Image 1: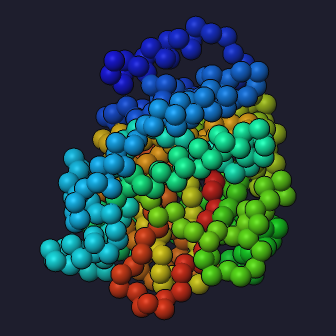
Image 2 (image 1 turned 90 degrees about the vertical axis):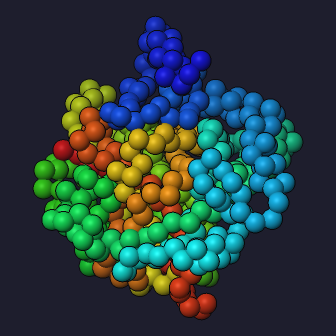
Length: 425
């Protein structure tokens, strides 16, 4: 059975059942192929059992993958290949960053002015995958110790199914040179490319203080979004992350007290935070349940949420440096270059929800942007979800961290804050 048929069959099976659980309508952008996803792309909310949001079904699927050793063939292909480049159906990939960089230099791969040619890490496994988040009670259950060991290995193996591929960064400040008349600091840029830039002079003094970030920075970003999108009626910043590899203070995450901790690692893999399902589910659970909402409390009824979500809404991530970025830049890919490419779903299993993020395989013509030496007043904006599906606007960007091979060896790692938001029209 092909993927479109599987989608139709799963949707038909679900619509015959009665459920009070919010299940997002299955969406595909016009011209977008069906994703590599479980259940033909249907949300795990469809498999809710007694209010568990489909987490039991997702756990079962995860363990089926683990014990069936799915993906091992890809690992074997990579690890048993002879030294040097590895031929994949998407192009030549490399196990190591240094090998890919050597290939870029040997083949004189050039970037336009302000740009940069460098290795980016993509998955080479185009099948859905699962992660059990650290807060899941599964990890504290002594009776499941053996299973936990198997899960840890399975999740480590996600990284063994990735390779580095050569890519070219363009300077996001120069978008108008590539698209005459299009300013990178405009909503039109976000509509067309799924990426844009904004200006912010924050009064937040300490981005490591979660309470101050919520009190000062969240309202600043909500105002920035409403100014940036003049047709918007409401903006909600609902959480944030701080990235600083060199931070020497307490990194502890405490979700109950709205403390995200401080990340020591950068997401060095091409991905997007949401997809067709999770964009709607995440919005709904914020509006009606305040689920993991660090920002303003929301008190919408189901009917009010239906009305708000019947109009256009978007999820936007905004990344603001705390100091000029010298290393580990944040890079963004423009929608038109992958609009016809299927995404690969990764399911993140919580106790009370199943999140969905996405990964992508390599294409040499992916249109990547970066902001060289991004300043603290420059905010990178990327779209993670848009409810418009008719193909008239971008649905999302995807993004990654990377290593700048031209930076000095002693260049400090990126220190920045990333906030997540929904914008309503």
